[in-house]
Image (tube, rainbow, N blue to C red; front, side, top):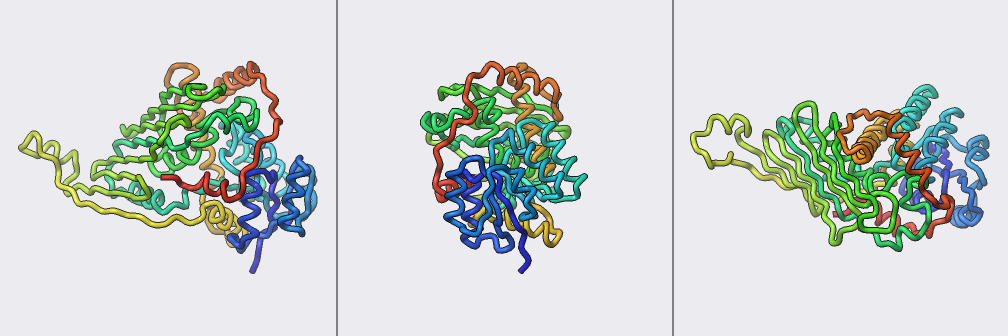
Length: 390
């Protein structure tokens, strides 16, 4: 069997989890041949798991080694674009952890560099592999739900304690991560929002910094989006509520979807709502509906995305999420931040210069040690934390 030779940039929590998935045989078309990290202990831990690994104390040394065809980037957010572009310069394929970057210009430049190099560029949006979300996309994109009306997503089950934020001084900082819940926990949800329902044209958002924790960035967010076709979207997320909720509701002219507790519930109208509204002779009558329910166990999302990345390189198949999709979800979060900072609407695409000016000012006024190490999770805890949680 043909395999790609993969190098992992960063073998902390995320990188070591991906390494373990390959060792466990979950990605048959992937061979990890090298890893790079600035922390000698992490390199030692990786080599104990896989003695054949070549270990490098800098990403550039690994990229120049000739030992890899592709790289998986699992380092802090700001460094994703830097290492991706270094890979593209050398003709190396890239799969990066989410988010693709901190601001839209970075990700646009990444896509331009990947296209120029003629290599694959994918994003680790593992929640796209969940059959429930795939089914919702299929229904909406096929037109079976009719003309889109509204998306409402309450995803508040990203609860984090103060101890989580204290585990590394770079956590939940503008300098270290570039944001809070929107950049760390919710990128998967923002990606699924646009993947299923499409991109809004403008955003009005309220991002509350340090509402529930002693942090500088947002831990509570409400976003309202408007679409060219008249549809709207509301997105609510926080790391400060318990017990949390994960409920996605999508309405259209032909019915409604509700995704909650691992199930997709579909109410189908027998007559389109707009037609019924203006033809019914009764004021309080609702259209008749048919009901359908769907559920299916989800695969291991991380290994599924990585294996699909390998197949795209080897066989020319489609990526689960390419680099352009990383730009879409980040455009929503950038617009949400800019709206909150300016107390006004933010168009999509956003005013990149204005966004970067505000972010730079926040970074300048923040006093942290960006490189403080984090406490590490086990691979099992990692995989559990980032799967779809109902």
